[in-house]
Length: 298
Image: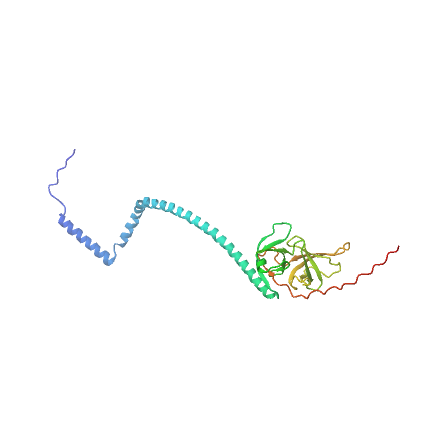
């Protein structure tokens, strides 16, 4: 082991001198930095040199924090996604209800306007359900004997004739639509005044004019209204529009199909004519005296 003897004479400044020197240097640097900003470039250089070391030292903590944030954010997004999906379904259902209410509101306004146009007393009714027999065109409404509804009353909506009350219960009534096979409506051509009988075909979108001569003036697009000669339907209400006219010389009558104007299968509220029109009674038929019997020859 090598050993070097201590120097014989001590060299260098004393600790007190060092303290004074460094104190003076510190004061000088403080004054120069505070008054003249001489050390700003040095600090910037030192910060640039130390920055990679700072990033390296803080990298593990930053990575751990980001991993934690990732899992927290993923869980939060899944919860938000489920909540938004539930709200979307709820809003979709509310939107459908709103559209239904808007359509019902528009129909009610149209019924009120139609009620003001009619010169007879009407009663609003709600369609509950259709009849069970699939081969008939009938509906059930929520008005019956307690509302003074009688069989034979006309049923209309805001666009025209819907049908006729055919059976009455204490709280319900059965309405036969004009599209039923057994339903007949006396109509009149709005263009030329020709009268005819409109019959149902069993199809909600098709009606037929029966017993019309081949030379009768009916054209495509003619509008048919109630003639009122039967005393059931108020006159002048829209019923149907002529959609097709076929004339065959081999047949006795023309084949004329029509499209109903009223919502016979789409509306949920209708108007029932609660009072018939004031029509004078039919004149009494003259009774002819019976013819005398001729005596038989023996």
